[in-house]
Image 1 (cartoon, one colour):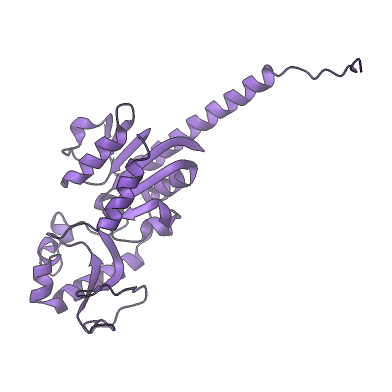
Image 2 (cartoon, rainbow, N blue to C red; image 1 turned 90 degrees about the vertical axis):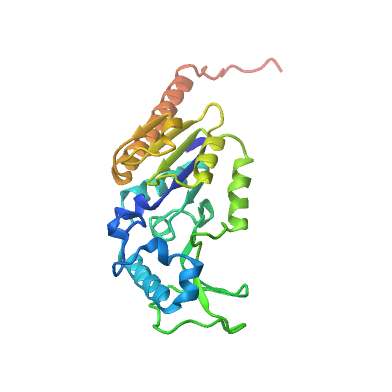
Length: 263
């Protein structure tokens, strides 16, 4: 068991290693369309069929993908850490399928398998194959939309509160930021606040980011390569210290006194 508090923040780079394209770069383009122009309220209002076709294809790609060693390493640490929270920008379910407990994760940009009403609060999960027609809300009849945060929209206040509540629990001994360009200010803000004055801030990203200048250490390798190594080293060190403590306790344990009392 790792007794220190741990915060991990991840982005699309982690799931990219499972074959899920990021929004940045040509690999993320769909039908020669820029995904940053599709993931907007304006695009949905203009052509909901096009946006839904894109999300159905993305859902199918996620269904076919498998968790990689980066997802598995984070899930392993989550189980071993006393206080742990993963804040991920990823909308897929690969962390859950890797074994990470749902109550230790916040999908700050939503869940791609969630479908919600564009007008009322109705929502449902769509884990089966989607039909091709535009979904209508069974409660109010309005168009249903993917349950994700689009560009230009605000983050879910309830999810922000989960992160803030974790922050109020005290500084973290370890903060890892992996697979994200850290373009959004809240990523850097949460990472620095969680680290406090004494915690370690580790960045894992192939390229330098705006977070790099604050990192205790930066790894310029893929998350799937670095995270298993980091987690294994961390847990190995903990086990080594625990064994040393056990040996000291045995060495200094005084033998029991078997003599009878005076009565």
